[in-house]
Image (cartoon, rainbow, N blue to C red; front, side, top):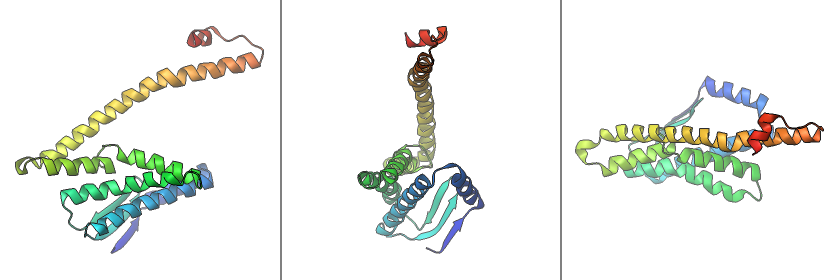
Amino acid sequence: MRRLQIDSTACILWALSVLIVPFRWLISALTAAVIHELCHILAIRLAGSTVRAVRIGFFGTVITTGPLTDLQEGFCALAGPVGSLLMALLARRFPVLAFCALVQGVFNLLPVYPMDGGRAVLALLKRWLPESKKTDAVVWAERISVILMGVLCVLCAVVTDLVILPLLAMISAAYRLMAGKKPCKRTRQALQ
C-alpha cells in the first residue's frame, strides 16, 4: 500500500462519536470496521492485485486497487461482509463486537451501490451482460439500488405503524395504570 489518507470529516465523526457513544461500543464498532476492511485488503491480495491507497472518510472507507477482473471485484467486495459475519461467531466471548460486526456485515450486504453488496451486484452484471451492454451494468445497478431503497422505506413505514406505535401505546397505558390513572381514549383505541 502506497498511502493511507484520513479525511478531516472522519476525525470530526470520531470526535462526535466519543462524546455520544459509550466507549466499549465505540471500540467494538471501530474494531469491527478495521477487521472488515482488512478482509477486503486480504481478498485483494489473494486476487493477485495491489492496494494503491486507502482513504477513510465520513461516508466510509474507499480502497483503490490495481486492475481486477469482474469476478475478482465481486470476490473482493464480498470479503468484507463475510469477514464481518464470521465475527458474529465470537458472540459468546465478545458480544458487543459480534453485534457491531453483524450489523455492519448485514448492512454492507444490501445490494445498494456503492456499498459492498451493490459492488458485488455490479460485478455480476458486468460478468453476465454481453460485451455490447457492459455500460448498462452501472445503470442496472443504480436501478436495483433505487428500487431496494424504496422497498426499504415502505417497509420501515409499515413496521413503524405496525410495531412501534402500538408498543408506545402499550408503554403509555402501562405507565398510566402504574400511576393510578385511566388510559386516555386514544391509547385505549390503539390497544384494541
